[in-house]
Length: 279
Image (cartoon, rainbow, N blue to C red; front, top):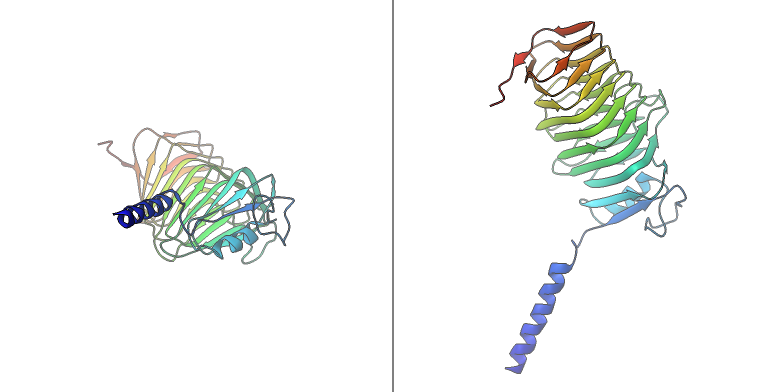
């Protein structure tokens, strides 16, 4: 009986430990403007760049890791090849100011089941960097609370080789020479919610779908929204101050819920909108 009791006690302790322990592969890396290349990317000894922190985290885990910014500084550029969460806290910056092929601030080329989150980043192309964030492959990408501006091509460029989901929320894409957001390949669903696409050539350019744009402002561009293929749904969005507010071309469909404000453009709508039911 005594042996049985000891065995039960030991099993209970082991189970409790398993329940309270974090994931075995959890890993966090930290970056700071005062970090060093020789540091292990801990909170006490942070790294100086996102890439070094990413490489350190993914040496331990290929998914589910996190990188946290400790103070305002520039930390890029960055190539992401595995699932990761980057928390910039509103002041983690990347300035990518060199023109030419491959000079993107953030390149995402991950696995088809990998989840990537970018939160609170300030990404600036200084008018010569190619693209702010390019999605070449992933399972899902979330871009939250970011500012992406001054790029020579696109602010956000979705050209994933296999369909992935993309969420862009509460993010400013402005002053880019191409599109603020470009959707160039088939998706498993794109949601643009609470974005401000201002003073780009195209605010949003959709070449594949499906895409939902809601609670957003597309303003002061040559074209606020251009759709060349696929289906787009437009809800609770202001399209104003553009040369053309909405351009529906090719075989594209723009389904409008009727609660949008498309006004103050030189041309309001080129092509036609399809009324969308709220039921």
